[in-house]
Length: 384
Image (cartoon, rainbow, N blue to C red; front, side, top):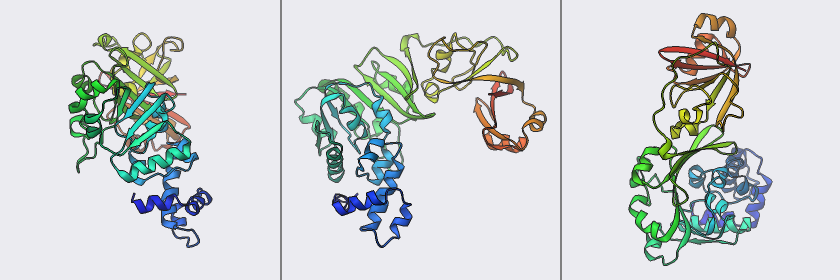
């Protein structure tokens, strides 16, 4: 976003135009000569509509949303789920300010750093529109601020930029700022440190880089959103968090190899458990289902003889099993041909398009079929 665009978006007539056209198609706005600064208004309406669910607070206040920041920002719900709190917070990489805004509710004072002067002004304006007064936005880099910092903070949060070259990287050493190089100084400045990583970041790599860290994998509506590293908050542990639903914690020392179930008891299983993607990413599926259900890998379903209700905090979806049988295309086609079928795959070499083609079915919710491969045999499970 240019400074000219920012100043345009601060004008009262442009803000009114955005409000008046908030529910229109952006392309229609851009072609409507009656709309003042129509192209700028169309772009903002598009970004606000995209963020209606992702950033409901920013949407409600009609905050300014630059294109690139909208693409890179994490959701409001994920920011609210972070376990940080205290007297003072230092945000080394403010960006659009999603985490800053959410965490400002739990800290008396927040210092947020943003290198880009225009984006820093955008955040200041958005904070004003939201009525947030305990955040100071400083236009500088993390490296420069930490070098000169003589203040001690309760916590530091950093979301390193992974797009510093043509090729996007998930390695912390290749991101900006380089939190691996800055870690000794960060430990001097704050007692708690939170590092937000790519959802592709490997949990074992986090523990290799920082032996005393905890790792938290966060999902939202069935999609992995963040892998967060925490230092100084608690004893080292792994967590899988399905935002707004459930979480599962495991002490690092308690995680080890578990024996596989002795056999697949198809006729006895009554419940299918689809573990949340956060459990998969954290490689805690089998650990979380131990004593609750049989499970053959970190990417598998769980199969329970009895209802798992009351047997622990199952992070995932539990459904009654109607039928289990080895894969038989002809039999399945007779039953589901032409019908709407919701297909779920775990540890299975098939794909959804192939299954619909084989069954002559289509996507829908009339029936729900799960497919998985256990001990060399592909099974089809109908749940309801």
